[in-house]
Length: 417
Ligand SMILES: NC(=O)C1=CN([C@@H]2O[C@H](COP(=O)(O)OP(=O)(O)OC[C@H]3O[C@@H](n4cnc5c(N)ncnc54)[C@H](O)[C@@H]3O)[C@@H](O)[C@H]2O)C=CC1
Ligand SMILES: O=C(O)CCC(=O)C(=O)O
Image (cartoon, rainbow, N blue to C red; front, side, top):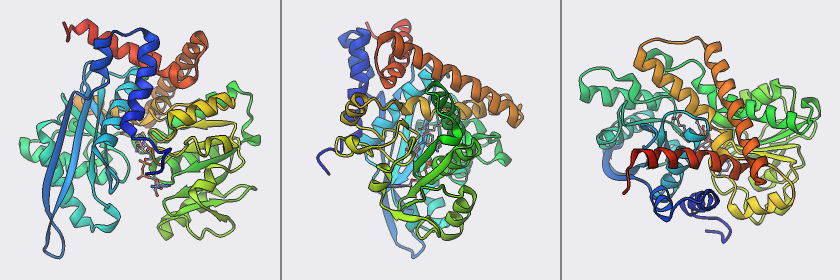
């Protein structure tokens, strides 16, 4: 591990502690909120297509459930670790609190490489993992959703497996499902749409005109690729994008629709005609107005933060910026719109999906998008006001709001003596 790459859980605790100290939370409250409430590790067998049986390890961590049922995605990746899932669960708690939706925070993960598995293997892995974590999940207790390398199909298998155990369909047990089984209009685009609303507000505040704004996006999956489309529809010029295979750059602007089609047809961005190939590290340091990390944690570190040329960073990924990089960017006057706010559009529409499933009453897409816009812009404004009032950066502004809400719920429930 490179020296400036941080353990994500230590990073999440450091960010929380910063807010906890400033809020004057008691030692007991800080101890409660810095630890996950429940952690489940499951080791389970899956029969592979060649007949072999392989063991897999998965996790489901609930950080806090004082404001409502636990909520958060499931990640499939060879790099998943318990500390990563702990961090992602804690970030979910603050995310739900900062946008004011009635959930606590959770996250799940399975150590696997879905790109090396067949559809049938992935289904068997998913169903077995869902069974193993079914002691925690449910519409009133813990509601999973997609994250990296999981999608509506995976959510459908989890919903089906959970429902098979119950003996009836329980759509509200999971969100991010296909529309045919109780998914919500707008959920697929929701995280990116939230990123777009927040980017638009942050640009307006700084007098950045879309036609003069260049954007670089790291990650071209659900969040990154749809963000690229929505941002270019806003009139901004997307000059660089990347995926795990590397990045592509054209200072004159990429044709986002052609790029999307190329990536779909070729299974990635590598070799995109009319663009210069760059590495993911080079991509982050390209000249641009707005940089949007939309892939992984630990991308902006103390090593590259001094060389970032963007005038503003929007964290579509969870945890892309280490606390050291945060300090450097802050000193350099580069605002960072923090993950817990910037990418909260996904969980916000997951909340709408859960409500619709519980009521068996579905809303139109424009209603979803309008409600999302109003929640995201209100939360963005509240974060800016808090940061201004306390003379702190935007991450701390968002944390002060979120942590205070979770601490208040914890205190008022009297869950500690
Ligand atoms: N899907 C959702 O609704 C939400 C996702 N997020 C966060 O957004 C980020 C992206 O998630 P999704 O788009 O859902 O995942 P995805 O699996 O759809 O896409 C991930 C993208 O990142 C790229 N990538 C993977 N490893 C990389 C590396 N080492 N360097 C550069 N690129 C790499 C992949 O090639 C892919 O293009 C994650 O941090 C996730 O936690 C946050 C909120 C909600
Ligand atoms: O939609 C959800 O419930 C959670 C999405 C997620 O995992 C995230 O916001 O990081």
